Length: 254
Ligand code: CIR
Image (cartoon, rainbow, N blue to C red; front, side, top):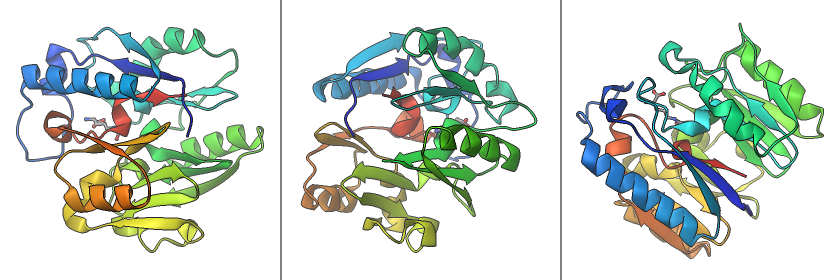
């Protein structure tokens, strides 16, 4: 899980009008900006170069850049985000991705895919089928990555919003799993750090070089990750949680 680059995007004022299924209330914009700045600081502390894109007011959810692309060592995939209000975010992101990648593949309609539904663990790629990612999109993605010798597994989700809402890969064969993924056969061969239902939000964490960034306020998850040998950085994510977003959603890491 060595990364040298990360792309993030500043939340716009329209962020407060973004999509949400939570009943946690409307985000406070000032607090959102503060939490986003702390996220950027934490990434820099982990030793990556951060490319910070300006806000796009026309796209309230566009700070969740992870859904617009999947970046690997060899190639980029521009996705076809499944929410209508978010779909054109992919067009905004493409020039910035072109600055880093020559080989770019595309998910095409009727296929839809959100990057939040893709988890890479070494040469294994897991693709969730969700409200945002359909079968056609998952199959297109599988075909693309298999050309580069990755093995791809499609996982229909039962309850989670995105695949990575409930699972993270830390490297070293170590998976962080919650809810429907705790006993999932596709993750049976990994060492697992099990996150309880009460702390489920902490399953969306990210390993960046030597550290694991986790949301603040989940002590059991933090202890488990630290005990497994990873120093953690905990960040207040309250304003992103209100819009169904987690730590991974806010960046593209490569
Ligand atoms: C949405 O509904 O699309 C945003 N409010 C949240 C996206 C979260 N992204 C992610 O989990 N990768």
